[in-house]
Amino acid sequence: MALIVQKFGGSSVANAERVMNVARIITDTYKEGNNVVVVVSAQGDTTDDLIEKANEINPKASKREMDMLLTAGEQISISLLAMAIESLGYPVISLLGWQAGFETNSAYGSARISTVKTERLQKELDQRKIVIVAGFQGLNKYEDLTTLGRGGSDTSAVAIAAALHADRCQIFTDVTGVFTADPRKVENTQKLNDITYDEMLEFATLGAQVLNNRSVEMAKKYNVELEVLSSMVREPGTIVREVAKMEKMLIRGVTKDTDIARISVVGIKDIPGNAFKMFSKLAAKGINIDVILQSVGRDGTKDISFTCASSHADEAVEILNDIYSMEGGVVTSDTTVAKVSIVGAGMQSHSGTASKMFGALYEAGINISMISTSEITISVLIDKELADKAVSAVHKAFFG
Ligand code: ASP
Ligand code: MG
Image (cartoon, rainbow, N blue to C red; front, top):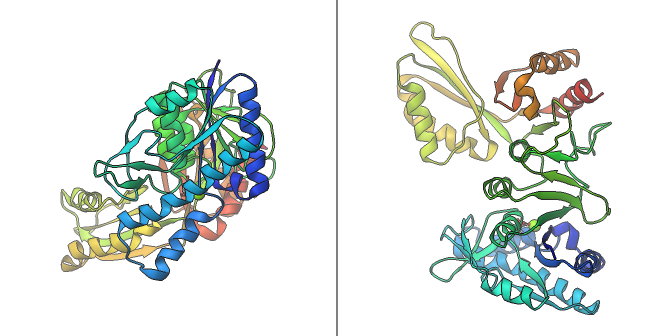
């Protein structure tokens, strides 16, 4: 008998019909003789709607009360899903995060899971019940409800799979797997049969909204094999795992991130320690820096540019103005940029990948303003309006 964890996102349980569809997927898995634990998110746009409701009353509500509110979304979906499974005649129980043993730190709104105490889960499974768990939530040491941050249900599912040593963790969503580029925007995309954790992390971080990146980090850490698949179309999805028998593909995909800003600091003193000062101040405020470019010094001054999430742009500008306006540095932020990246563990051992990407952009008439590389990515910064065109051009160069 295998133990299977299945996670269904908000769109998969958005209405009664979809809840019934999900109930059938679950009971089919159970019928085959498996034990099944299910993690579910709030229905459709419920979480956004709850946030809006809160904003109407108090836009500065405390994070504790926000968590108290937002956890309600998942309480609705677990009970409805359990009722659907009851109606099909199967033994089932729904559990809130704390009932399923989720203990977290006290960071309301972005709590980290400290442990999953599995006694209750195990007890229900031993009675051959299908267990439905509310994703995205836990309990802190003050016995207050916490949430794990937006999209946190993926992480809940992986945490349960790790704690119970599940045989498989299936993440059901509205796409049939991970593709070489966004199939809604790019022609001739291919679904990947498998992908490594590191590649998947790049996809997640670079803005391909398939899996929450904390869930992928956790899956990697605890070696939980994930499958990303569709709840609407029953076909095998994409497996995320450490290299097993990977397809011989140099590049796994092309992705873009349009929620970024380029911050430039022009005319700062060309002395040792400036980059250190700048980035440590930003790090202290939790601002993640990505692509960095420093100019050659001239006349005793130099320029530094970098990218960060557009949501952090204003704060970054403020911090840097505090440091540099006194010495004549000019700080600007530009949100008309996008980052386009290719991802693939295979590129480590292969030359010519960068030139192929740059060639494709050149032929499409797209100017590159910054470049950065890692072992498994090459990223370029370009005009945001050209992002889709760039992804298509680069995808065509690598995948035809
Ligand atoms: N319902 C939560 C959200 O919308 C958690 C999740 O969907 O994973 O962020
Ligand atoms: Mg949701």
